[in-house]
Length: 258
Image 1 (tube, rainbow, N blue to C red):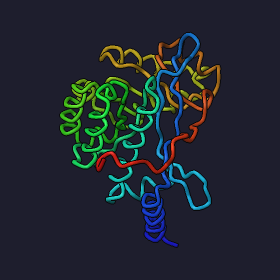
Image 2 (cartoon, rainbow, N blue to C red; image 1 turned 30 degrees about the vertical axis):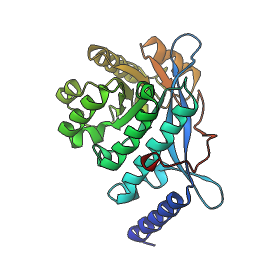
Image 3 (cartoon, one colour; image 1 turned 45 degrees about the vertical axis):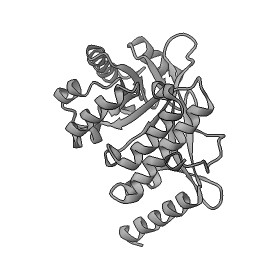
Image 4 (cartoon, rainbow, N blue to C red; image 1 turned 90 degrees about the horizontal axis):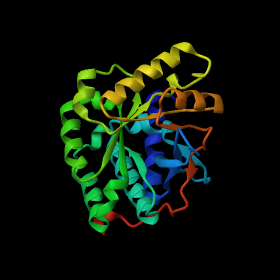
């Protein structure tokens, strides 16, 4: 089977799962680096459920849908499920991922507007994550989109910071609320002086721009302690919990048509 056939097979799988409502979020805690390391918020990671009841992570299908209309449907569904989580758990803060294909998309915006209409305080608990690479693709559109929604109380996180070719001028202009530092800098940071120096520099840069810092892919207590000592605000990774499937039913009312 060549790549085109594999991609088509993946698209068919995604389309069938969406139509059948076999899609949910897996929630992973993002904990405070100091104190008792209580959850500050959760990241909602999209999962499809295959016909055998197994969860399929986004890494298995996201590339295939990136330039396809199903990609927007994935984003719209992730937002709809995220809003349902926030409605069901009034004390929760939650982040969901957003790709550039959905920025300003009318159907995606309709889901958001319906959620805010039902609960005006929901925006203050919603975080939208945009990858560094995505932000650099269409910086002007991303800046305008962020500025509009931040007025509604919604926060924005720059995901995978340090993984790409960041323009620091753009970083200044974007005004992200949260920066999630790529996991390559967290791995073995307790024993790696180079990663320690890089984390320290990224923390200083983030503080200069008044951005809250999260270290991704934290795998052990030693690295967690080192990251806290280096000034990281929050920690995320399997050391604190693997993504756990939401207990809400996968098939929910469609907010956009409610």
